Each structure stands twice: as structure tokens, then as C-alpha cells.
Image (cartoon, rainbow, N blue to C red; front, side, top):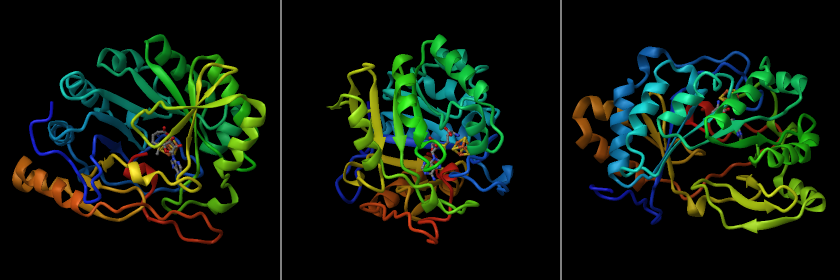
Length: 332
Ligand code: SAM
Ligand code: SF4
């Protein structure tokens, strides 16, 4: 139950969803997400686990009901599990849901602990089930490990939703088979349009697939009925009659969803971003270290007073990314 002033932005949107990038580091290098040679933040710049927890708990006190731990790859941060345990204690105590987005490479070893800590659902990014394509997209990943992680999570009682970024010429032919496989295994699939975040080694326009087109193709092969389900995030859902599972679409380029935005994002160095596609931010690390939770509250209020109405993404050939920071920094 919220005990402090609610989080309402200048456009009247109530913020109930906090995403926390617990690390900008990752054990993979997905081509659409990162450059091959990335410079990561020095460890000395990062928030301590205790600081992340205190800030997250402050958000819960102010009405946030859903927290997603993400990154980078959250499970490469050694104390990420301690954070899960700590925030897991808030589930049912103001927080409705604690969840995670992971590439699943380290999930097999952590699934039981996540379940014990109160994690009921996770998103796993799986852009291909083909070992060579997976290796190519991630630059060196082993799909068998990801599949093992998914199986371990499900065995531990955690519901898994698969996330797949649609990439022209790389995995677009795998979308229908992925929908069948996920559905047959009792998992929802969410497709995502590639977004212009941070410099990578290729032109995102070469890989961009409009999900409007994908949806048309899938509609010819599957019976899709609009489903009012909401996971609290930006996806719109359809029920797939043939499998009984859901198809989700996150289409920031072809179907802007900013009007209903209920999210803010905390980076691992304590910057609070109110929009994935803008530079507006406040420094919660300076706030908590300089003035404690009162200063954090004031900084959050400043951030909400400036939250942009919408992103202005476009994926055009040769264009520079909408923002310089990668999704892994802001927290996807
Ligand atoms: N490493 C974890 C993973 O891959 O699931 C969590 C972090 S990752 C940044 C979160 C999500 O963002 C993943 O589903 C990933 O595919 C997606 N993502 C990363 N860069 C993206 C981009 N430029 N456009 C669209 N989605 C992106
Ligand atoms: Fe790592 Fe996730 Fe980015 Fe892939 S999408 S490089 S797994 S942070």
C-alpha cells in the first residue's frame, strides 16, 4: 500500500512500473543491442545493492506495483540474486510483481532461487532456436544453455514469456515456428521491433522488420483474436487459437504506445530515465548519497515533471540513433 505521494507525470500518467538495469554488462553481444567492443561503466560508478534496494523500496512506497530487474544481463551481477531476495520480500506488501528479463544463459543455476524469492514470471530473450543463427546474432552464445535455462525456470514453477526481436534476413523466417514452439510449450511469445538505441556495428535499417507486416503474415497462418491481457508493459496481445498461448507485439515504430506509458527506468549508476527515447534524467545516486530518501523523492518529482509525452523513434538508413545510450544501459 502506497504511503507517500503518488507518482503522476505532467501528462497525467500514473507510474506503477519500475525497470532497474542492475548492470550494463552482458555475457552476450547481440548485434542489434551492442557493438562488439563495448565500454562498460567502471564498477566504482555503480549503485551498491543497498542503494538500489532503498530506491526501489521508495518507489514501492510511492505506488509502484511492478519491478523488472534487467540490464545488461542481470544474472552476471554477482549480487543480483541478493537484490531479488530483498525485493522479493515486498511482493504482496505493496509490490504485486517482481520479475526479470534475462538471456537465460545463467538461468539454470538460479531458477530455484528466483522462484523461492517470489519471482513468478520472467521474460527470456530468444531471438532464434537455431544454434548457428543464435550464435551469429549473439556473436558467441550457445542456444542450448538458454534452452536449459528456460527449462529450469519452468521446472521451478516460473512462467516464461519469450521475447524475440524481429530481424530481417536473420530470424524473420523463424517467427511462425517460434510462435508454434512457444505455444506448444505453454509459453507466450512477444515480438519486438528493433529500436534506434546506441551505436552498433551495423545499420539497424537493414534489419528492421515492421511488425504490422509480420502480423499480417501471421494472421494468414494462425487464428489471432485480440486479447485484453496486459502484463503492465507496452505489449498488445492476441490469443493464438491453434496453441492457446498469446502473441504479444511491442511495436514502438509502427504503433506508438506512449499515451499509456506507466514506466520509468533506473540505471545501474543511479540515473533515472523517464523515457527510453529521450535524454531527460535525474541523478538518484547523487540524491541518495547527498540527501537521503527526501532528496530521492524530490529528484523523482523533478523527473516526473519533465517526463516527455512520447519517443520520436525512427529507423532510417544512415540515421544516428535516437539516443546514444544502449538498451542495456537504460534497461530493456
Ligand atoms: N540481457 C537481457 C535479455 O537480453 O533479455 C536483458 C536486457 S535486454 C537489453 C532486454 C530486452 O531488450 C531484450 O528482449 C532485448 O532483445 C531487447 N533489446 C535490446 N536492444 C534492443 C533494441 N535496440 N531494440 C529493441 N529491443 C532491444
Ligand atoms: Fe545482452 Fe540482452 Fe543486449 Fe543481448 S539483448 S547483448 S543478451 S543485454
